Length: 253
Image (cartoon, rainbow, N blue to C red):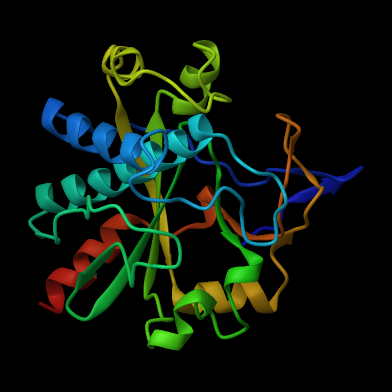
């Protein structure tokens, strides 16, 4: 695994992976994901944290919608890919929860708990907020209920960038947007996904032990994105092929 190159507090990629579409989403999926994300943000029926673990920036509803929409679309991407590969996962959870209620995993199959992490089309890192993980690779918010272990982490990239779309339409930093206005903006797009890879818990523990981390305040690559919290990372080019996880699950059914 390769570490990012650091120059003047800017962390630069050393092993990127090109986006290659693996599928799209039908209108029913988009409808379900849109309603879920709107409920979790502008409609306040559920709650996403307005800040990251170890972070201080408070997100607007437009930002929360963007993260919820991208994240849930990522789960449907994994569901779609596994289904097309002959593995039926549990349908992505569309229920809205209040703060303090944590999922035990995004998917569970053959006793393995799988977490899905999503990013933009041009994203090249799987990021895990440092404050959420202990040295054994256990998810701290779930330690009290015995569900701190995740067996695999899958990275999904979504195209086009929902963040760019929301910013272009001046919706990203809004706290109030009419549902129909936002829906027209979203449904005018054709979204697709790719899965650059996955890691298992053994790799996560290695990342933690070998200090694969980006500190709060550092800038990320040429975009100059400033990190709001400390994060562990692995580059897309260093991740294991998703086909290997499919093969493993099929051989252990």
